[in-house]
Length: 340
Image (tube, rainbow, N blue to C red; front, side, top):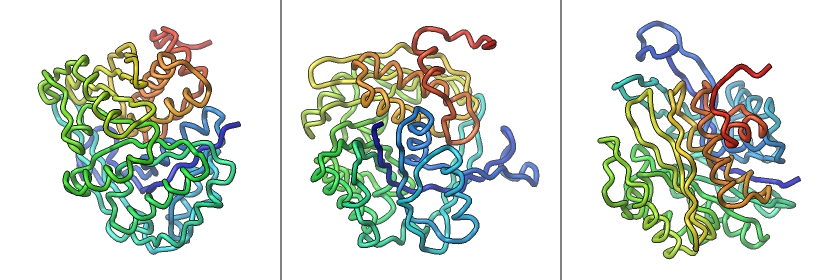
């Protein structure tokens, strides 16, 4: 069984019920989630030996985050205990023409205050096949950037494949800071994952004839984006998710995978969204699983997009689906009929 290590921050998610606005009533639903943790949960559901590495306090909220991962079969033995708080994000889910709102409360979280010497990457990567992180993690501070750099260096020394989802978050750092840091870290990356905005925000690489706010994506324009990313950093593969936003409730969802020679486009799914948070992470988890499983590039992008399409129907950050469910959808059964 392949072993995948993911590294990042898991946070407490507080969200009003359903599609209520903040404090429209006096109740909020508490769950956990975060980019790399979400990928680990997806992989554990697919039968991969998935481990999540982070730093969390020893108190009850920190333990709750650990337990939420352990519940789904994620290896939590590499989690460092320390610090005083778990980062929080408040989510107000959008609907129709009202977009979702995400508010971070994560300053001085346990991971943000971590020190590089706390992580023994040589031991963590023992027996590992794959390492995954996102651009959210180094955005937490220079110390965390150094931790990511040391992790990538250790992974390379052990021959571990590295994937990175660029995941630019403007609320965490500037485009200039993101460009400088990710230019450094991407020299270690084998598989790059981006979306219709990240390549532009981080590296200034834009697709022509595209208006993401007007709901128009020229998918052919992303061939150039993928090629420019690959040529600049030498990625083995570059994947770009393609979201056409009709409204907060309805999107069209597809992706493209480039292997340095050929371009592979998935089928496009019309989505009626229950919860879109974690949609990109579920794509990443699906892609890692598919590549580790020896699927062809076309099969890999189809599996990853189908996995992510299913995630949009599931509440919470985690994608709680099986390989058979994803393969059924990727195989063409999008009917949503009852399985008896």
